[in-house]
Length: 301
Image 1 (tube, rainbow, N blue to C red):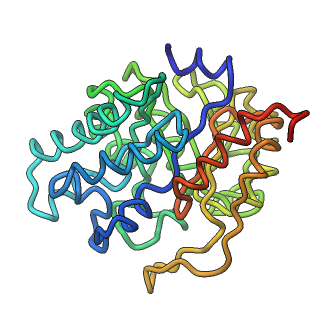
Image 2 (cartoon, helix red, strand yellow):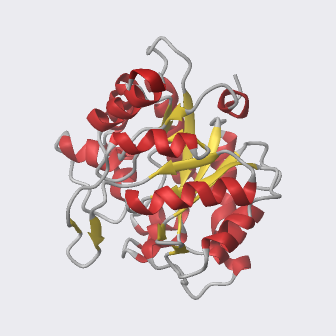
Image 3 (cartoon, rainbow, N blue to C red):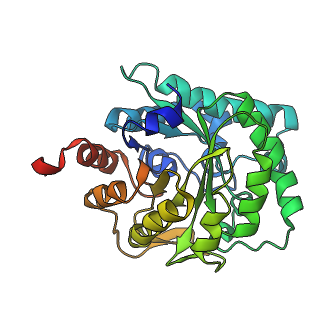
């Protein structure tokens, strides 16, 4: 079943943070490629992480390609042909991990922002000093390879500003794969400070975009963002906040309290969210709780 069709039947559960699941299994993700390093070194670890989320109740696994770019791989000595194979492998691993779960599941091919390749936390700031055209040229080749691997959807995620959103909306045209567009936000603004009314409106008329929303943000910021995205775009909403902790790029650690609660997800669903899960620091146990909340009829809660 196509993803867009599935969204008309029920909300779908997204997975949680891939990196925290890999780290919990003992893998060091300290270099610039982050989880993408394991595509070459230990692909079976990525498959196992995907499988853990499927088994927890996730309907959709997000690939290990968030920080996988031709430029980033080149800095690690990986040539363009091999980098393309690793991008395709990311989709294959997620697909294979779901093959034995006994129900229909989907694969979202992750495309992180330009700042993810820089590995300096700038995806939480945006405004890299590049034009929309330059950002489009950066994103298009990777998206072409990911689309060729035939995922069910492209996850244009953790987008920090409207310039990059415009670039991504151009870059997915003609690829033949639907996409969702998901901003990282603070309050009612993108991380770069643009109003979310403006940010969400960019995707309202984009036929390639099947869902719009937010990810890798404080769960408290997601509440209003879901309602706003539904009202402005008329499209299904995607929402997958992080744990509520804050990433410190200098120390490469998460700071502050955890605020993600599965009890929030029914409110997001009722406000228009159809793709619901978690991002960084949200693990399989919490995703199992999310799936349970979404499966429970309102009068039994």
